[in-house]
Length: 419
Image 1 (spheres, rainbow, N blue to C red):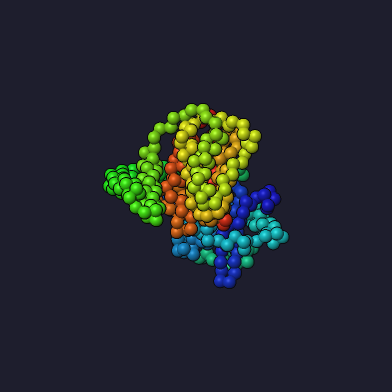
Image 2: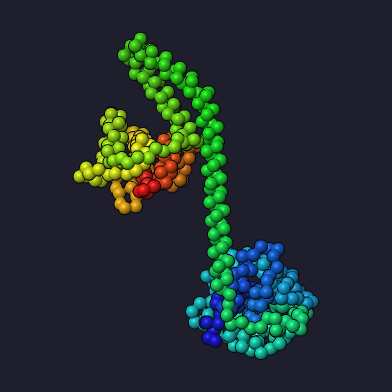
């Protein structure tokens, strides 16, 4: 078997003072090594790893040398089981801490693998009990001194040779299957954790919202009522200030309502409606405040004005779009542009709201849908409107995403059709 086919890769280096030696492991040892570095520290090595140690002299020499450095077998006898257990305890960290860029490459690697292949052929003819006494050959081949103690012996029973017969076929397919199972389990754990976090956030928001509703809404209503009554009794100069009191109390009411909706949303009432017409209604409802602040709202997409029929809760989807536009107006402040794009294909409908306001960082975009994050410290207030919009979109089986940018921001709603 050619050396480049026989060997699958390099083992971590063996250091001897200022010298470094590299041994390789056979292709048939890959699955066993992969399983060993993935197992828990206290788990004993299985037959697969012991079989690889018994049939891969280079792997055996490396393990014996590394275990000797750790004091596992400085003197006396050792067994394949002990060497396998060493892999389970130390293999992962040793592999992680290795500078693999320093491994032999090119012609040097080819020459070294050829020398190792010749040694492997020779050692396959030797009784396993003589491997340690002939170990100098391996370490000389990689340019370092033999680190093994003279008194180290391999302890094995008489049936070991038949139990660990040479196998030219590796169980790499099992290693791949094991890795996939591990990744799948981790994915499930991540999903369960995300669901648990989201549930905890909603429960906390529920308690907070109903507490705020009881303790704050009534005083706010009292303030708003008295402020409106004052408007007919004060001078024109004070009337604007009183109106700001009314506006801010209304805003506080809306924030509490958004938080309550996030914690306990009302069921959607789906029906077929014209999405483009709904977007135009949103623009019309915000036109006055946008014009007063010098913000130009443009509607792109479906320029021919053709209806865009979708099924969903028209009022809720309108609220979600309005929340995005309102957020953009607040971010721009004075003088700017908002562009709304509405597109549809066979699978989904997409509404994008792009503005010329301050940019948004990646972290702010990630946290924007949380009811506990405002973003105002980053220069762009996000408020609870986005939280409500995200909840509405998810109730329709869709997603809401903010795209980070240094200048401006794009909020994109995607809702699957026929949901």
